[in-house]
Length: 413
Image 1 (cartoon, rainbow, N blue to C red):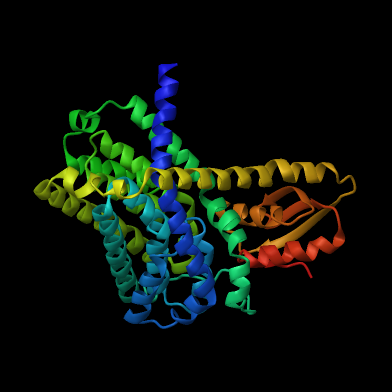
Image 2: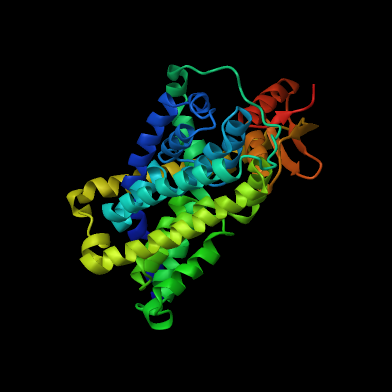
């Protein structure tokens, strides 16, 4: 019983520290969603130059897109004429840090760590993009068949759609990983004794290598990885090792790497992985030196969260909890009850091109499930097909539009 109480208390502490900052990150993400559409990004990344790499890096840093969601967007950018260097820079900086993950980093690890995370991501993206443009220019990357919507929504339309964007696209994309992150952070706080890493892994460099090996193949979004990193630091892991995990985990994963190879080529992918690995180790070492000189508690853990009144943090926790509750109720219970009232359905199969990994198939499945009247959705990745039940023929066009909006091509007439 004491274990359960301790475990729940740690989760509540993490959640209460993060919630209000995550909501503020959502607010920034809403502004970006309204005024910086994807078409604007594509227009600025078409030249094979240093300028396009710099723009890709600057565009990617604030965008709240995770490592699975960034691959279809980057593929669309590449198909629109973006250089390989700009594409790689976007692939690195976008999932490593966004408006939401920066605010979580600030809430748990302080503004110094947050700024260091942004600076490291920016430099890593710039270096990778420059090296890819120099050494990977003649690489054998291919254009994947991704749809590009020519019709541009007005900012007023995007503003009207912002609540749904925040609830289902932004929060929905990180809800499961974020909850898993809180659970893992709670388990680390309960089961790993204080000073564990100092006792059993005295070398900071060894712990950074361990985080590198774990982070590269692992899929974890930037927001969800931050509570885990914070709990590991509290158990004695060096800030540099935590930074390595925060840089490699969101920017790379085993499934996404195979798709990136198809988009930019094998040589460019090797450059992409080498720069991320070496830069994360180098900046992790620099952060440890910085912390060692100025003191861990002063640099990392003291970030003036007491400036926020308790009622505001509590209100943020309640608001975020309500958003999560509504998301799960609406996407599970309400949808189940709606489908329970439908007794006449038909089976539909659509051929979809552009799917190359499990995250792609998950994106297609999510897009179809988001259309009212659909049920029993399944995706055949090898056969490039999506199968589902639907209540009305008129809804099929909405399904096609949803799949196209997700960045894929419906081949059926």
